[in-house]
Image (tube, rainbow, N blue to C red; front, side, top):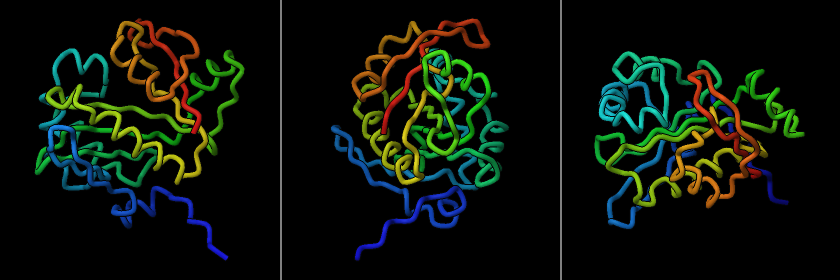
Length: 202
């Protein structure tokens, strides 16, 4: 009788990153490796953050876009509730995709308004960011497919957009809808921007 694969944990991924590492090829022929963020990625991650355009920074918000933010993310590996995955082309980081396995009270309250009861056993938050030069090349959809597989292997049944998607970001909304996310309702974020909540059933 076949044994069921074990559920992933942050500790198991930290101990054996290759369990969630993927080799991808873009339509352009460029090779990309998708893997967990590593402790020594702070320099490459700082370069990635610093090179994001103002528009991309508006769509993907971080505490800062410098080496301090990169060092904080690397220092947080397997310490809290986050799993951060990076796509690399050679030594360069070209994408940062994140899971948060903690669900905050504000999300729980908003989703109750949609008739959805969130819980950390079944649900996770998801946030993507692509380097400007790698947007609109099909990489985002390939990486999302990898994230969906990883979420399932963590035992999750639903992925919700971390912070939602800005209501005026038509390109991102099309991307999420194309990949199966369901728009649920609008809310105003801490910066006063109108956003859509969106959920993907796994």
